[in-house]
Every structure is written in structure tokens, then in C-alpha cells.
Image (cartoon, rainbow, N blue to C red; front, side, top):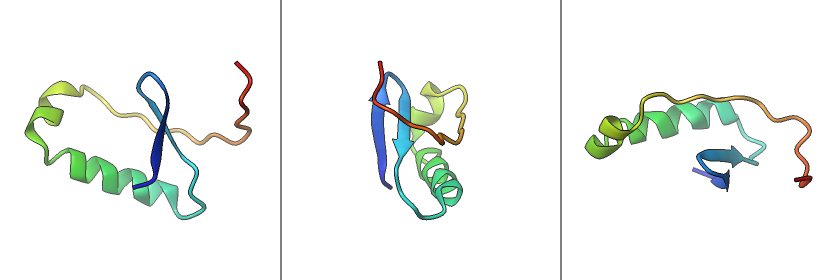
Length: 55
């Protein structure tokens, strides 16, 4: 689906396509996995506009 782990439980999608639609597709697929449903309490999405490598 194009998501890349950046830190801990944070994943970023660098795609130029409709990323909100990709988020919903990922949530839909993951919600069909029984152990995932039991393990994850909530999912959050936000838009990153000025991503930099500064740490």
C-alpha cells in the first residue's frame, strides 16, 4: 500500500495518489485480520506538509 515506518508506530505514505483513500483501504484490509483487531485500539491519520529529516 506504500506506507513506510518512520518511528515507532508512525507510518508515512509518500505517494502522490489519493492518500486518504489508501488509508481507508489499509484500515479495511487490516480490520479483517483477527489478531490485528484485538491488538489495535485506534488508528489516526494526519497530513504531513513539511516533512524534513531533522531529528
